[in-house]
Image (cartoon, rainbow, N blue to C red):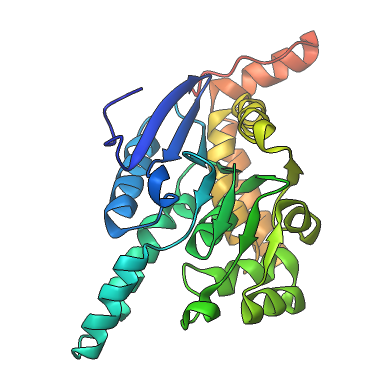
Length: 269
């Protein structure tokens, strides 16, 4: 464990092999999301992003929940400020952007959804590159049941994962689904028993981290932008990325390992 993040908010555990584990750590309050937690998360991801040895990050929650969503006290404060005439648009944008650094991070971020993920908690899990969920976890977007419009990018991310009609139904109703249903809808890669969520996600992270670091980081960017590009534009992105790879030592190692029929050992050079 390192001292990059206060344990009261975010715990960072080095897993070796280029994998880092981040844990939302406020289990007594179901890892409720606050501006303070978001600031620590975004700062920690920025520090990890500057480290060439970090290839994949896994995000999970302490205790039985992934995250119950935005802190209710924080939301009540927003209401009071709004009623006093203060526009909350900018503060909500800052709140979203801090947690959604999982989508902007330069490496793949995998969500290990160990338990309930509701509201903003579900949105953050869906914003990760891949998610493994507990089959029995409750997952949903309960914003309208709180009297607020969906936030944390949910109205953008969810339609892209499950299609417009299913997303509309889940967002309009605020209905909670099981992790098994969530995976069937396309909100997660797979659903497994709760005890297997973190080991399965870490195993997948290690498998990804065995790839060459430069293409992994390039792929994070190219996948993020692919939805808004034409095929011709995406081909240009791919060609440019490969041209960069051809100047690396790792591509030589990859080709040598293929000829020798062994696993490559990439060094990020």
